[in-house]
Length: 154
Image (cartoon, rainbow, N blue to C red; front, side, top):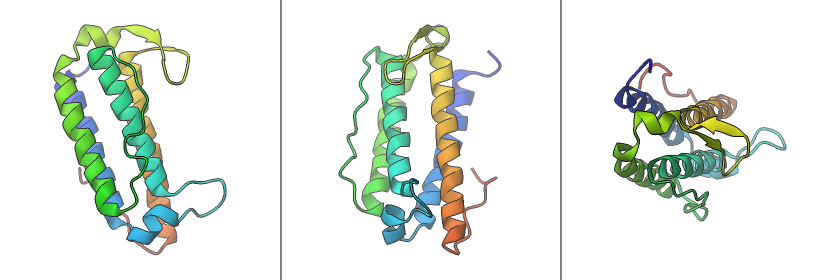
């Protein structure tokens, strides 16, 4: 491995801190309603997808229990969305110690999206998905005349 599990977890954590600051930068009404063009979704919907994927993958890798659920589907305020981020962080912190390097190298069919990949590739996909959607959030903020958070501050 190029980095330790703990180093990778810190990268994930730094990205999440930046994503949370991006959520905080949105006016509440625009967080749930604004999308610059069809078929783009609101930033809140993208965040819910990020949380669902992170929860599903981390739980599955750690416990071998694969479930793609949407526990935060009813979220309708910025405070609830931020609480959902914190709840996901707490659950992931609970599951993370059960993930071993050996487990990360295990290749299995993806139970949610198909195709085979290693569990590390799954976590990497989840990270890239978050970065991609946060980038969209930055564009949304700029479209609304709001300066996004500094990218380099994690």
